[in-house]
Amino acid sequence: MLIRRRRPWDLSENAVTPRETYLSRRAFMAAAGATAAAPALLGAARDARALVERPGHNPALEPISESSWSQLGPDDALTPYEDVTTYNNFYELGTGKEDPAEYGHYLKTDPWSVQVDGECAKPGTLSYEDFIAPHPLEERIYRLRCVEAWSMVVPWVGFPLGDALKRFEPTGNAKYVRFETILDKEMLPGQRANVLDWPYVEGLRMDEAMHPLTILATGLYGEELPNQNGAPLRLVVPWKYGFKSIKSIVRITFTEEMPTTSWAAYGDGSEYGFYANVNPTVDHPRWSQATERRLDGGSLLSLFERRDTLMFNGYEEAVADLYAGMDLRKWF
Ligand SMILES: Nc1nc2c(c(=O)[nH]1)N[C@H]1C(S)=C(S)[C@@H](COP(=O)(O)O)O[C@H]1N2
Ligand SMILES: [Mo]
Image (cartoon, rainbow, N blue to C red):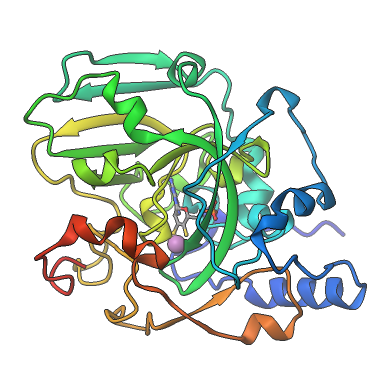
């Protein structure tokens, strides 16, 4: 008998995340001994990479220099490739954590172009290849803290966003940068459901965009970005909640006014702010942000352990100056 599987874009907004599915899969893997203990030290990143399956390995991406911006603590272990690429938030490909990996093949990333416009002297539309060509790729191992209170450690491949932005010569009126994900119901069928106002829009203040920690990622674990992680080009802003790190970017606009972003516009606007800096002292209206659950390839038990969330996700020394004198409760 054929059972029609409901596709994620058929589901309503309050569809339940199949977390049980995820946990039982992890339990099975742990029982089968498949999840080798993650290396305790992040210096072991390269060894960890050698252990993971490398489908679609692209030697053209190597060698990649490791960046001194990859500052990690002794308790930060790389999240296994499997988790980084199957536990995702990409609502345009379904609201379940495993949906983006399952439906990512709908997204076609070649050809791809990026339009840059707004307050700049040299606007233009570039192919993906021309957009990234001038930039040496480097590895950045960053913590990623989702506003839902789970976190990962991901070895991204990319380059500083600021280096790309400078090429378009932003004018003195450019106070913010606005980013847009591709709008295409065939490639991102989740856009048929009104979960958010599509396309997904994010934004940064100009100084945040130019900060050396902010990168555009083209890959992870030394591979090209899997579609579910935002291929071919996505933002990574490690001191902010994960929703700021917009995926599959097709448009970058310099603006004078603070852009309206998808999650900040959600509901009555009280849940997700424009700044979205990771802050353990400012709770989400419906849950605490003081602690988080780290996906680090550890035992099933470790999935229930909480660790303290760090101010600015542990990047306080590098970014606190950007917010000097600002009330971070008001500008959440
Ligand atoms: N276009 C788009 N970008 C997005 C999202 C999304 O739903 N759509 N989800 C965000 C959220 S909530 C998080 S936590 C991160 C997750 O990135 P990852 O799946 O690569 O871990 O992507 C962010 N970027
Ligand atoms: Mo998130």
